[in-house]
Length: 167
Image 1 (cartoon, one colour):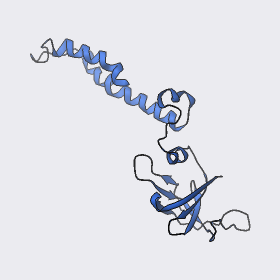
Image 2 (image 1 turned 30 degrees about the vertical axis):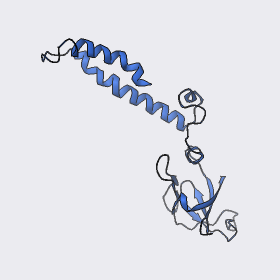
Image 3 (image 1 turned 90 degrees about the vertical axis):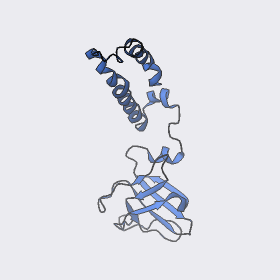
């Protein structure tokens, strides 16, 4: 999209300095020509960054550029939610249940993370919780899940089932 908007600038540069022989003869270029890289590189980069941040923050106006669903997979849509916190329960393909805090852990210092498209899907769960054999988190006397102070890194292809509950 940006290249289509930049083509008139590129064409004028080509016509005025390449086709005319100015570059071939080694003549000095006007100072204004040195702004072309800013227009062709920096401006689209800045606009792309603004649009990317707006998509991350799910601003409604950015749907003009991204369409109604900018995330390529449901995985990306869920885990790209800004400041997402909650509880994640995973049943691994070997039958093991694991779960924990999705967010920032005070005890481990980690923040949960999910690799985004197009990278291989994996998850870093910031703080594991104790989970019983039915996939339910064990809770303490305060009613909150019992955290272990241990993080978990798991590849998505090891997961048979996932459940996310917002905090």
